[in-house]
Image (cartoon, rainbow, N blue to C red; front, top):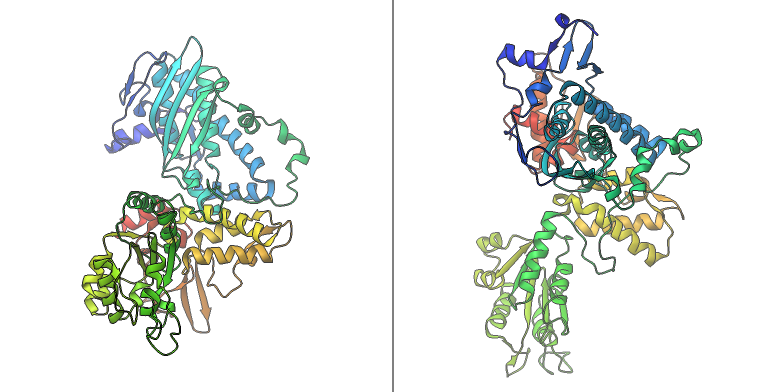
Length: 600
């Protein structure tokens, strides 16, 4: 190890420059029960962040970095992500997870040894919290303590933590998108190794929520091994014996990507887990018990009729008829007779009387889809029917009372239509009692893996096709596709792929995008033609072509970066996560650069 004089610690740098270490909020964690010496720990408890920073030494002259007596290295997270991808692709998911979990375990164990050696008299709680600070100092994750308890007599440990800004999640999501299983393998191994080494008994951590599964943050729980059910599965990743034999690394045929499963698998199930989906479902459940008029808005294909049908099924009217009308599919000359019915002899060809959709839906629900396509005359007659609760058949002389709950849907902005004079304002206010907006699929990407899993099971049964699942590449491309046709388009893509894929095989990218869909890599590319190029951003073409420029016209690197960030953020509608996917980088990196250029 270099001499003390040839090294400089992180704390030395802070003292020399006057820069305060950390910059995070003051730490103060409540601790419930257990054999810890105190029930709370503050940022001043030793070893604190400043103490730990004293252990991180840089020796620029000979190219070495030390964490006390352990040599460490700085490595790009992209390099670790690349290593992770190659391990998964060549060894398989379980083998790669085992290797990375054990590597993390060794790192955690070494840090625990450092803390015990450097601060042998530290309070047990402060030593335990030092692990979270080391984990953050090493750039892996920000740790938030929720609850921890330790009984020294029985050896029982139980702790819950939230992880923020996980570097492992950034790389895993960039490579494979949102999936159905937790991905912070090294970090789980680190936590297990640190706490087990610190307390001298096996304490196993499990990741119960993860950003790689679509959660807002990662939630981990640690318990003494005997307190867990099925701890054998955890030990598979911690024990190396299953992986020592070279034959264990033979991956064989490719395994299907793991996808989250929805609670319901029926063909008419509504599937989703995103916050937007849950918000719409909550509104649906609140309005279902009433007879209020509901207006669904959203792009074509987002599932407005599915939501309307579910509204009927969970309402008191569920045993009465549900009648759906696509207003755009009925000619203007027939819309009145279709809605209100017709009496015999009302016009040429009316040889018999028949009820309209309002009468057929009596006691139940009438769903009017594409309501913005109704003519002004039809809008006026619909308004009267809604206000009076009565209709008159075409050619009739008497009013017919109807008890109908009206649910309308449109993919147009009705307020704008009112402003333009193409939609009646009084009808708009009569329909807009309880508006529920359904966002496009590209704004609820957390739901895509669930929908993929739901549709593949449905179409396997429908077409009797024995496909095993999706490849990782197929999952990655489906999660990053823009879906101009929304859920309906995803449904069609999966049905097509189930039919085209080999029996007993996996659905790959070439089975999905065979219908002319604009499908390109998420990375930024420059398609060059003769003397000019076109900047291509994830299937979107920038407005201006990229022409050869003179040295005087050339932009600086900073200007070029700012321009690309502006285009990506604009193309993603201000969604930084989507913009990061377009540029094939992590959200954290894109947000940092966007803030640097004043774009957010």
